[in-house]
Image (cartoon, rainbow, N blue to C red; front, side, top):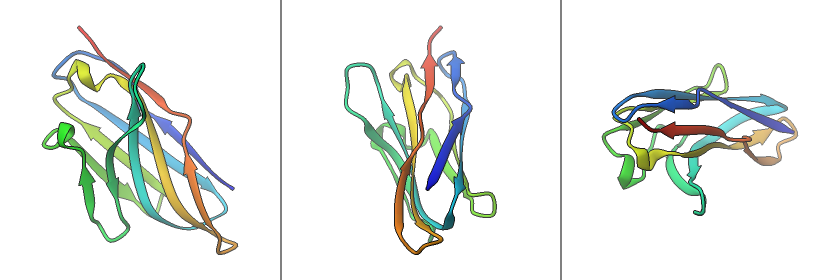
Length: 120
């Protein structure tokens, strides 16, 4: 099994910044792809950004130029730096990991989510 734990959410004023972290633990051989998704009240969960082990990144248009994803493979951790936050960024943010377990089996894991609220 693979567990993901997010941290770093909270309340921030418009124009502010937050940094989310997501740490993976468990029977992990390798983490291939990481992703951050978000779900606003009454809406479907949507992709924010993904990154591959090779370094390719795919950002949603709504966050380009403001959000940056980075990963520390030694720590099995991914980060989401969010700058110039807007009220529309308010949502529960979930991290996602596409992993290979020590058994050789592919395991896709989700975190429990962390709330980000952008409000004055």
